[in-house]
Figure 1 (cartoon, helix red, strand yellow):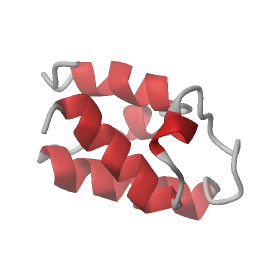
Figure 2 (cartoon, rainbow, N blue to C red; figure 1 turned 180 degrees about the horizontal axis):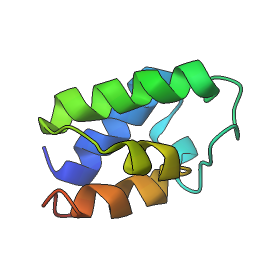
Figure 3 (tube, one colour; figure 1 turned 60 degrees about the vertical axis):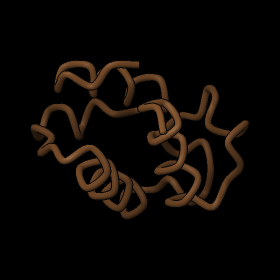
Figure 4 (cartoon, helix red, strand yellow; figure 1 turned 180 degrees about the vertical axis):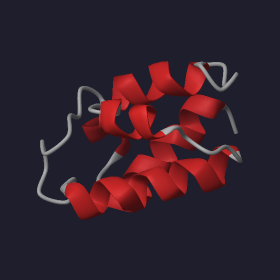
Length: 78
C-alpha cells in the first residue's frame, strides 16, 4: 500500500467518507471533522505512519493536502 493510499484510508475510516471525498477536504468541511474528530485523525495518522506529530503540526493540519505536506516533514514520501 502506498503512503497516499494509507493516508486516504486513515481519512476514510476516521470520518466514514469515500476516498473521492478526501480531495480538497478541509477542517470542519464535514460534520465529522470537528475538534474531537481532528484528534482522532491525528492519533490514527500517528499510528498508521509510526510517528509522533509536533503540536504545531497538529494545529496546522487543516486539510487532506496539508496533512500530506506535514507528513513530508517526517520523511513520508508521496
